[in-house]
Length: 261
Image 1 (cartoon, rainbow, N blue to C red):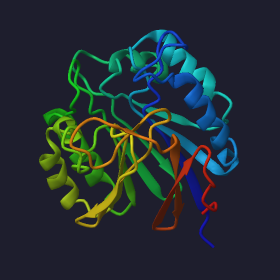
Image 2 (cartoon, rainbow, N blue to C red):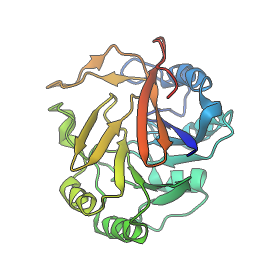
Image 3 (spheres, rainbow, N blue to C red):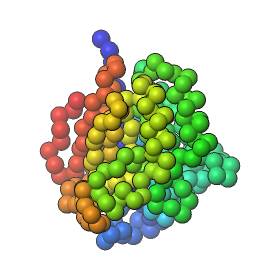
Image 4 (cartoon, rainbow, N blue to C red):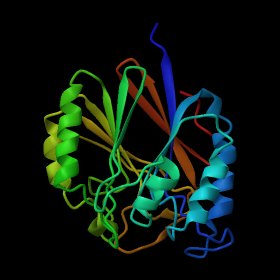
């Protein structure tokens, strides 16, 4: 019998240097704490945890250090990605133990069972939107070509497909068409996980599933023309890998949790 593997995706924690600071009149720290209490209910099933960008709102060392302390309760490998509010170079040093050369992207890979994960850095300093860039796309092509038979999940911060919100889709992945061209020739890529959009979004294109997770603190109103707040609770996404099959569910604070897959 094929072993079942679980993983957890957290995104857009938006911590500040000051743990009492607020964004959009909401304090990120206590909201994250509530989400982590929900994560504790299922963490014993998980093999890894993904934090898919906008870990910090101000790029401060204190915000990253506090996030690490909060997540240290979980005895899991944790993989961090930078978002548009992050300092990617500082994150790489503090959370990845490496120095990035100027303008270099923070790419990562890991394996869980039969599955491979490819983590991309879509952050662009000073910009709300994201971009992979020529060098990272070339790296992605080489990386995918090395393991054409391994089911693969690509992970990034920015949404690589429009989510139907006019204001938000102006700050998506700038080279998403070039990424799509790579994925179309890489049938082993079963899914792309992302954050940034502060809402749950799911679609399928050319055989690949695109899945976002709710922010751990503030939700954007889906399919809106202008910026607006959604009243849905913060949460996280859990994925299940069984053989060649991927399943997923979203957990939210204050709501009846879905059955563990």
